[in-house]
Image (cartoon, rainbow, N blue to C red; front, side, top):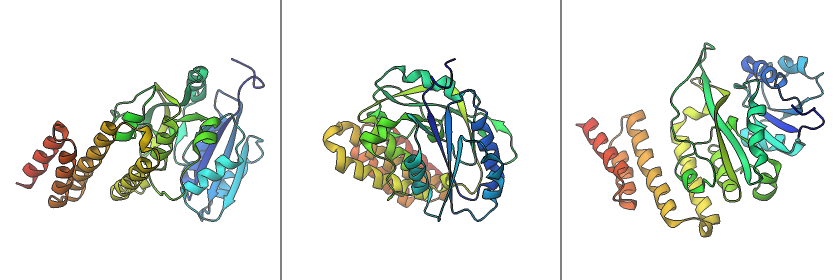
Length: 298
């Protein structure tokens, strides 16, 4: 393995808000990485718990930088971390998750392809009792030029991804007008100019618990419609019209399916599914979804 002086610096941004029960495990996993040339930028987004006290023992490590800001939301916290970072590569670890020890050693070699801007991997899960478990990936993962696939589903697990600094220099950082889906918007913009590379290894442990933002299904779909609308407006001349139609059809159908499943609704979901079918009449997904909702209603 190259010496630390030969290794490119990797900046790891940890945005945290009231994650004192978990953040020490997060920082331990980063400090104990088998790849040594890293900096860890912790942005505390106005926590009111004892996060600061929990982190005090790490601040003697020159690799760890702690920044406290007034509560401004996860998007601003992540951008603040990017602003002060110095690495040639940038990665993230949410403050309730953690990395496997050799994550960087496995992923960084894929950047030998100079056209690759983002390397991401598969993910494992941990529950509120601390039990690690596996489950089938919800979406197929893709490598290469993936804009057409990414328009339909965000299949890149956020915390697994590492990207070149050049990506943000050409495509910008997180859009602070968005509260959810910020990674999908970022990956879409990056994908216009860079290839993505998928590593099947599981390099990230994602914690699932009841209160996390990802459980807000209405918020997710509200954000998805806004993001897709804005992305089409700004970059539509670089997109394939058929890919866009598929993306819009999927958004409507998937929202209908989700609302029917999570909330027991049927009229609104049927309207959504029919909108999706109107956009892509020959796509079996829409007709299957419509049948499933009607059968559940009956």
